[in-house]
Image 1 (tube, one colour):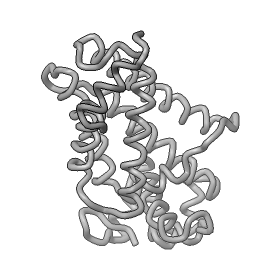
Image 2 (cartoon, helix red, strand yellow):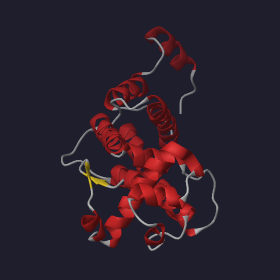
Image 3 (cartoon, one colour):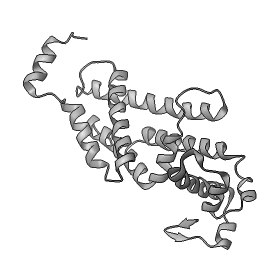
Image 4 (cartoon, one colour):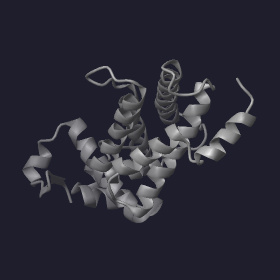
Length: 221
């Protein structure tokens, strides 16, 4: 059913919603149903969860696929906004990196159902329609922002002078693993896991003796 601030929304209140608020409410309902039923969900399931008639729901979305596509596009948009956001004060690389990842953690924790449903519907390949194009725009924004952040770490002398894109892929992959573990085994606070992830990324997983030996054998850029 439809809720606002933990309380069930009354019929008159729901009817006064504007188009954007109504769409948001339907998407949140769809996320809850998707996380229970997966892609076996129906438009009728979503309408029931949103406390809408099926005909009223069709005024906002054309079909189930339209709803699910919109979910992952919006999640991508929110993630891109976080990567593009600037902190209120200038931060050096390590604190700036943590500030960005904490922002991601807060978004995921505050909108867990929405976030998980959107991530589960993320396309793995280009399909060539408008929705996929919109998501890819957000992906490119996140990717370029992450690479720029890694370059800042190199410029500040925090990271060794390797390609910034390589650092972006390495850290991005580890972040994805942390999120997937949280999705399956959570919920639990994400910030402590992010702290551990960043510590390993910045200091290395190998003990000092092994690390020194590896670095001595590594080709210099």
